[in-house]
Image 1: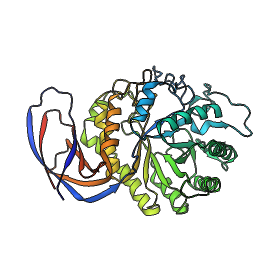
Image 2: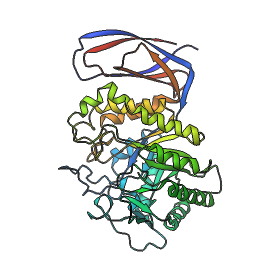
Image 3: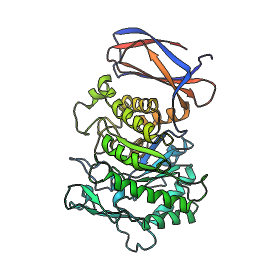
Image 4: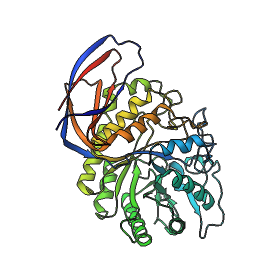
Length: 432
């Protein structure tokens, strides 16, 4: 097979001149697949955070939460339409405090600041009128929707163990919400059960065996309401930070057809106020550390759920809303594109960027909806990188990152080159 490179995206550091040039031979195994992503691998999130959400001395969310975002912004609509289609995950930290304003729910309050509640906010509600408005733009732009369900409904805080929530999940509110969604003809591609409830959870956790018991209830509910397997939404979980013991315990007891996607979160750049973050983004040894997480999740999926596949259902690089002076800039592309490449290399099916809009790590400016640089990286990947991941080898130089896929529009191979070096350029020879 002839090697036909139809796309070469080269990311360079910001220095105007580089002092040396190195010759590198890159071999792409054009006939050797090492992974397969979903056709809609690139994904972005919409989050529940209200305007009052602040970290340190900044409040980066503005009116970009699910309940207050202006859905008529032309820039927002155009940005979504360009993907044709874009996968959007509806969820985030507050999703386990969201009730759905349907059925027996008569009082539908907004989130209010409450220091005694999870993440400092009271329970909030999604009115069905707002769900209608969201689905109007989803239908208009062809979005594939992954919806994060509240998995803490009717549970209680443990009196023994801090952070642990106990009791069975009560599914009635979710049932009413799904029935309303079906009655309106709205399409949901997948339902994700809870947010960051594994042992390494941020604010709350659920025992692995209890979580498994409850996600079986969700799976049966989805099967009951969507009896046609062809249109049945997938069930995803656990949507938390990878904890080997917890994930093992959860997956070894859940039935083989319960979980359709094993989801986890990545925030490998640490807190948003880290002054060394720009150094981390350009340090190949630091970027390589997260490979252990990807490898761990892949191994556990292959062991227990090979038919389901691994997803990164949330990743924003820096925690707490993103780094104000870095996340919305070109420099963040070193991290973002490297993560897309690494996730696909470790056979992850989907990678959801936190967020489409809202916070400092958004693909779109929170106020104007004008694309930030990473938006274009996401769009290029979506349009050019096909689902088949190819093996790449090179003369070892850690500062040159190379990822290759079969091209989205066949025939051909699409490649991404990332130059992390501050003082060298690379003269690359491609061979097959």
